[in-house]
Length: 518
Image 1 (cartoon, rainbow, N blue to C red):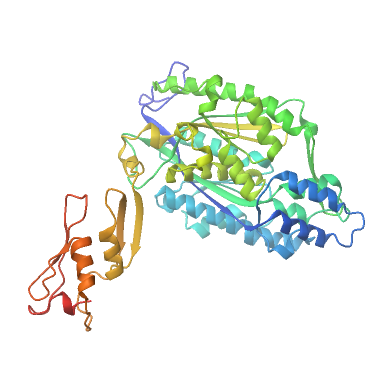
Image 2: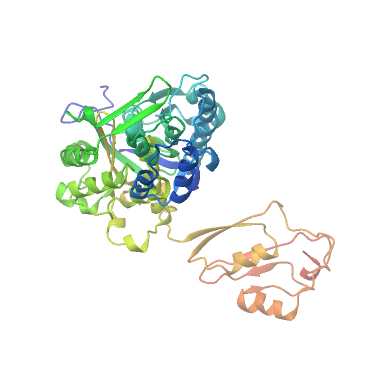
C-alpha cells in the first residue's frame, strides 16, 4: 500500500473517486428455429432408432418454453452425429465466429480503441485440444495488441460469463487503467451432435435445453481524474461473490463415454436446490456491497433483501424451473427477471454465454430507454441489478451492479447517453437527405447527415422545381433564400431551434442560382 493509496477501515487499499465499470456489452446468436422445426429435426436424425421416445421428446421441448432456439448449424445438421474432426471444424469456425461478432459489438459500443485492450478473458464449455487456441485467434481477428494478457477458462459451465466478469473486476481494482475484454461463447447444441446411438431420457433433456451464443463486455476503471473521453461505460461493478454449495455434487453429472458421446445428467431437484441457496447467497452479496460503498465513502443506499422487488435480477437462462425457483425463493416476480426470460425464450439455455447475454439485453433496454408495455412499471426505474449464475458443483456466482448512467448523470460521458431524443443517421446529403433532415424536429431528434462530398458543387445537369414543391420547401420546411437568380446561399429555418442552417454552394459564376444546381 503506497502513500497515494490510503487504507480503508478494513485495511484494504482503495482509490478515491474511482468508479469501476463494465464499460459496455455485446452478444451474438446463431440461426433461430421454432420448437416445431427442432422437434422434426430430432425425429429425422433418430428415425432408425426404434426405441426413440418421440412423445417424451415432444413434451420436453414444449416444457422448455423456448419460442426460438439458437443453433450455429443449418437445420439439416442439428442432432446429426459428428465425427471428432467435424466437431473441431465446427468449433474453429462457428464458435470463433460468434465470439468475434460479440467482441466487435462490445468494443464498438465501448467506444475505445481495441489496441488499448490490456487483458483478454476467454471462457467456454465447448472445449477441445486444438491449436492455435481461440484466445490467440481472437487477438488476431480483432486486431488487439499482441502483448495483451490472455486467460482461458474451460469447464466452469453455466456461470462462466459472470465468473470472468468478476475476475475482470478484480483486475480493475488493482489497475484502473487496465481495459479487459471478457468473452464467453458456447456451442452447447453440440451435445445433440454427440448423443449416444441410443439416447436416454436424460440425454433428450440435455439436447432439448442447450443452445449456441457468444457474449462479451469491456471492463475498466473510470474516475474524475482519469477517464477516456471516447468511452461510453454503462454499469458500475460494485462487488462480486463466488460460492460452492455443499452437498450438491450429485445434482449435475457431465462426462464422456467410451464411444466419444457426451452425457449430461441434471437431477430433477436441481432447480429447487438452486432456489433454496440463493437467499443466503444474495444476502451476503448485498452486505458485501454495503461495506464496499462505505469504504468508498459513497452514501448510496444498497438495497436490502426486503427491497429486492425494486431490483433487476439478471439470472442465467437455466430453464423455466430455474427462473421460477429463483424468483420464488427471493420473493420476486417474473418482472424482476424480465431480461432472463426474454433471452431464454428467444434463444434457449445458452450455458456460460447466457450470463453476459442477459446483461447485454438489460443494457440494450437501458440504451433504448423502452421496455415491453407489459413490464413497464417501476422496475425499469431501478438503478441496481444483481447478476446471478450457477454451474456444476453446484457453484453460484453473483455480481452487484448499478446503472452508471442513472447514478452519475452529471459526468460528461453520460450527457449524450441521457438525451431522450432519438438519433437519426441519414446517409447522403442530396435532396431527399437534406429535406428529411430539415423536416425532423430537433427537439425530438438528433440528426446527422453523412455525405461523401466535401462541398456542394455543380454536376453539369439542370433540375426543375415545380411550384407545388416550392411551397413545400418554403412554407412547410422553412427554407428561404430561393431566389434562383440572385441568392448566394440557401437558409433552413429549423422549427423549435434557435439557430439557422445556411448552405453556400461553391459558385463558378455569379449568374447561376439554385435552379441549375443539383
